[in-house]
Length: 595
Image 1 (cartoon, rainbow, N blue to C red):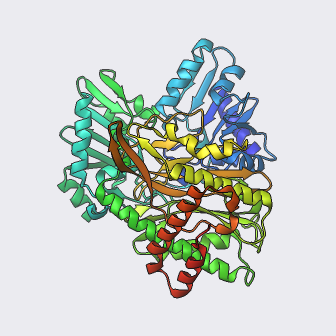
Image 2 (spheres, rainbow, N blue to C red; image 1 turned 90 degrees about the vertical axis):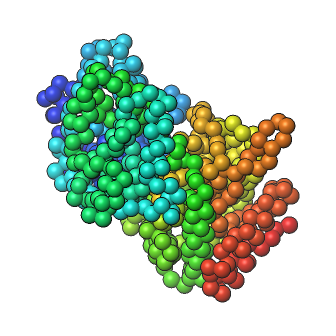
Image 3 (tube, one colour; image 1 turned 30 degrees about the vertical axis):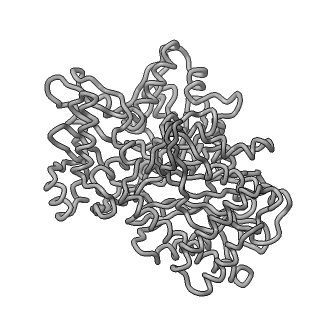
């Protein structure tokens, strides 16, 4: 079926159930950022393949709301369909909630699959729609009814993440969670978010491509922990280890019945951002619902000493793999056909050769020339470019290792570039250094520091329509909260603490021309203390040269040159023991000092 045919069939179901607007978000039943194929209902109905977006279909109209990372991609993929693009965050562009409130009649009915909508969004809609007396129907999965060849849920087996990598046992982590529950005076804690469950119980799986997470729910009390999961995925050895630590394993489908059958009166914690409406409605009326961010989210954001040591090691291995790739690219460009997909494949091959590698941490972005202007570009055979000895190539990629998760971006100069490209490259580098060299007082948040990255661009009337950086999981999702450098006016009030890791990735994206991003992962560490307080700084733990051929040295201050030269010395020292002689020679040249 075409997109328009799918929407027509959806409207027939809506008319039959007297629903005026149907919302189709990107999320699964756990509000996972990168949903498994089974849950990609929004992609199926609209044809838009970006990771973030919401479709709303009324009896007369259809729209897609997505953010600045995907404006160009969405415009291309929606062509020929009746779905209109609403560019989130742009002037005079309504949110989908505002739009629904505007177009629906009084007493209209709004529908969505309750398993795919978070409690927080539901609460927002209830408040927004109150004046118009709009009601809700949350029991129908209309897309599921229409999607005849819908992929099945994953049956991949789970595995234990050894404490020598994780740094803390599941019993230690559960003790920390129960301490948090006591502070909130709660009887139960319902955990829905898959990254948090995997971290808490030191289990991993492959239910979502590139994300070693497990589809499950957890219900925790002061005396027990129940794991709701497809029991066929739990092998005997894993089962024995979990049960030894008093983890009760139950069928995935029993979660709502277990919640609804809680006895007596009590209280239960749930994160409204990460818990779906279907489960929220199953909580008995006699229970107080405590709406709090997941206790585990903050705990896993602050990496312990063992995790930090492992992360440093995984980033060295990952940097070596990228340098091996860049050496190969420099040697073979112009001698054989190298496409954007070739780049993806070669990077995957070289990462797979690294010790403890389990694959990539997200789909590689390899964008040549104007393709790099699409922040989350995905090369396809029918649209990919062949690389030439001219212009720039942006590569955003990462790996999953038993000892950590990596994420790094480099923009590579392949040949002659324009003055505009060189200036933009240098401005992005200045932005990157501005944040990398920050020293800040204890109590600072990402929001306090984001200006350090944007200042060189704002002075030129430039900006990027995304955050400056995000937390990174440990053998988990490449995007992790609760901290993150958000684009104004979004505020992140989480205080930065030693042990938190976050990416530093400013960029410039000129549609139809080029895209430039320089990204490293940085670690929050203690610096010094004075009578005015305790100060912290960032320690860069990604290692790969920044292409000197893209730099206009006249635009850099001496302090910026000193930072780059010092960083490049460290890159060579860290990576050269893992390279052959040809690769060392290449790296020596690429990390040469600039004056």
